[in-house]
Image 1 (tube, rainbow, N blue to C red):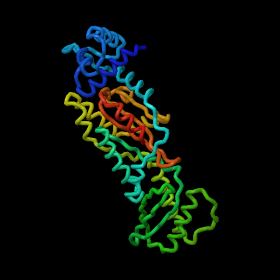
Image 2 (image 1 turned 90 degrees about the vertical axis):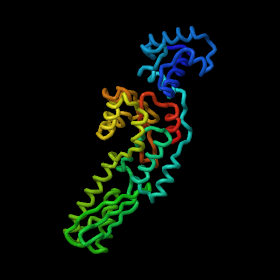
Image 3 (image 1 turned 45 degrees about the horizontal axis):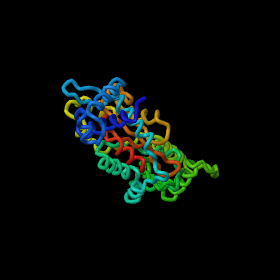
Length: 319
């Protein structure tokens, strides 16, 4: 669609606009990017880029700024020319899991904040759906006479806690038996179809398995946000409405649907109205992370359309 020189000029316009927030003129491109052509040649190329709808001319300046179409073209070129690492791992997340005794929620909360510090943008981390994660162990114990705590240890090392109110205290021996029953039942392993000794145990099992099923299948809705204040810092005062709209978007279930639409592996970038008609000034860079071969979660970096895409994409390729 465009020549190599036009692409170089478009890249210069996008990157300078992201860095300085101002329309970019021909002299600026020559000074900052060592382009070995005359200002007149650059102006002619900028007119061509404008005719393609890739840049826009400001009424108050002779410079150009990227259009949403221009940002899209720039990002597509980045994705095409940025190669993922042959072997990627998530050493930092694994380290956090160990630091927090495999409490996945705590580790992901810290991880989201750390990623926001690296990117300087708001970062969203979605917890993996644990429905494919087998149970390694189940423990039941009485917290009080009327409260049972179930601790579930998954094969990935993640630990979950579930509370259940009961009518009367259950003996330690019965809790062990119920825990073993639940473990085998959940993992779909063969077990002896032996009727439980007390009908109250059956009720307890049903309640606990229902809670476990609900916890595992609802885990995909657990979202951790880091650096929410970065949205205010990166969106200028003229975009107050955008700040409110993206915060509402993140707090709704719409962000989940965006991940569901993105079924391919790798990195995907949504710009402006590609996300939502009300989010013209926002971009979201999305990627997956893996805890093991079964558990996959999602990461999204959220910022203005004038985002430092190259930095974000390179960071996400590393994880």
